[in-house]
Amino acid sequence: MGGETDVFAGVAGAVADERGLVHVGNPLREQQLLERGTAVAPLGDRRVVSVAGPDRLSWLDSLTSQALAQLAPGASTELLVLDPHGHIEHAASVVDDGETAWLIVDADRAAALATWLQRMRFRLRVEIADRGDEFAVVGGTAAAVDSLAAVARWRDPWPSVSIGGWGYASGDGHPGVERDWSEAVVSHEVLASIVAEAAASERSLAGRLAADALRVAAWRPRAASEADGTTLPHEVDWLRTAVHLSKGCYRGQETVAKVHNLGHPPRRLVALQLDGSDAVLPEPGAAVFSGDDEVGRVTSVARHFEQGPIALAIVKRSVPTDAALTVAVDGEPVAAEQETIVPPDAGRTAAPPRLPRLSRRR
Image (cartoon, rainbow, N blue to C red; front, side):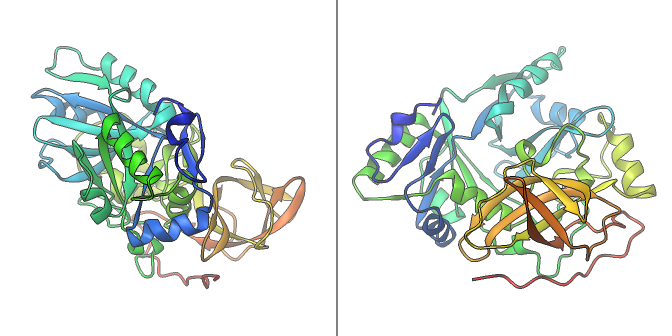
């Protein structure tokens, strides 16, 4: 969509910016339509990178956290690119069609990922291309996305624990199990047709505020939000779907194995229920406090149609799971009730967590 805010000009109530469609007048209602499968969300904050060539899967396998060498056509997974210390540099949703691996990535990191992949080609038979000028990404339920004319469709594996993965959050009552989410890679011509149908009241659209609220409610990490340059995959429960703990060597693997097998991640992701249904939402990056001590930062924030103001935050491992937390909003503390995602003792040596869920506000 290239930052063209006029793409959605004909859709009633549409508000767009350089990253695409923000909302169409009622983000809370849009969340409900997305959940029901009666709306789709053009995701201008997502971009497509393709990797073609006969060596593409074994090559990606050697560079990233995921086992991809035997990825079957049409199967969906995701990968992480880590630095030598195990910190997350890039994340990508991956689906292969038998000839091309399609990577769906955060738009502001696509160029950097494509450039890094180009540098790692060496003499292998792979072709990397940033395809954002040809294709767009549209999200929704599997049924809603399957109805679109797409070159590739990715179904989010979250929060199932993939082969070779490890889940730190409790599987009992994990909110992500209720989430049906897929993303389609469509041509800009198809996107224009979708928007034209919406302008003619023949199709319902939702903006990225709605899509992101459903993501936050499902405890689903994203690189653009939860990866701050020092984030380990363990800290945000990303071993669950993006890391294969038994695959061959890749950059950052030593740290991944050491933290998981011998220790605990130094920080942990928590879900926050923010006090006050009409409160001004904190900005990502807002400080999280336990008493007078700053213990973390908000990474994602949303207003959910059932739960009200919610957020994800990364806090120090030493913060007690029952600690009373506050978040700074316009310089004032707002109470934030925490829900454990990654427990303080997360790691292979810990017993599988079975943690209580907080009530969900309506």
